[in-house]
Length: 278
Ligand code: C2E
Ligand code: MG
Ligand code: MG
Ligand code: MG
Image (cartoon, rainbow, N blue to C red; front, side, top):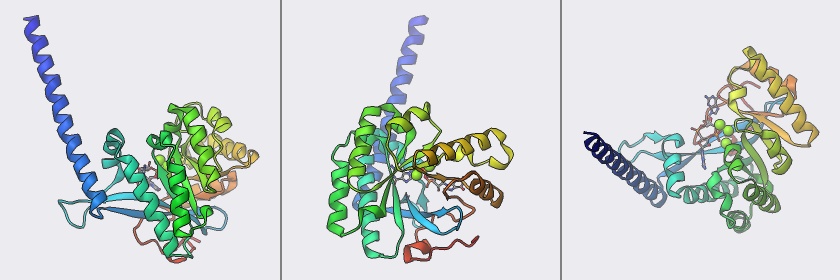
């Protein structure tokens, strides 16, 4: 009886594994097709100076056109995890870099663009060189490109991350630690990872006016960052009260649905730099 059970379990596990492989293959094919057939789109969300509410940067957020439903858009949460598993993320990250740089070249009054780089790219020692070449060929100032790295990814190999950030800094780009505070031992990162900007994770911002602990953390992070000569961004700013509190705490920049939602045709692409809440 127990042997029968074991056999059944093995069969079940094999079925699960093969089903997952089919799903993964499907996603890989979709991603490959998107890369080859203009199936990816960049949306942009403003990163605003907290005090003046003027656009300081635009964050590029990738989406996929749904091949089965024309006009429908697939959010990155659906395909990035598959792309990270298969390694296709390296191609997506390069596509995003190329696209962002070509838009910067095309729109001289566009503010600097922040691109997200997966932690999978940290051992891609050729990526900083790739960025440098793309910027040079397009005649775009490196200062117009910001690179966001997720802190949770950085922790997995501190030495790789350290080297990667150093190489990125040498290209003249701005380096931002994304989702800051969401991982573990954030203060060790601060010591070793020489980023210019810290983006405080939305977890601390979402409920700021009502969450006393979050207020203490955010105030503390803003003050430490300032003393270290780094700038801060708060993401997930959804109302005026939160925005005012962030100004009071000395957070430099803000981003969130209160200011704008990501869109493929953001007004700041064409040089319009004020938010409607200014
Ligand atoms: P992230 O870089 O932390 O981006 C912030 C996410 O929060 C975005 O979701 C954005 O649309 C959303 N968001 C912005 N403001 C608000 C707000 O006020 N409230 C709420 N609830 N959400 C807000 P999105 O575009 O779905 O991206 C999710 C994640 O996918 C990103 O998190 C980033 O880690 C990843 N991602 C996006 N684009 C790329 C890319 O080009 N390459 C890589 N490697 N990852 C990307
Ligand atoms: Mg980001
Ligand atoms: Mg973030
Ligand atoms: Mg986040």
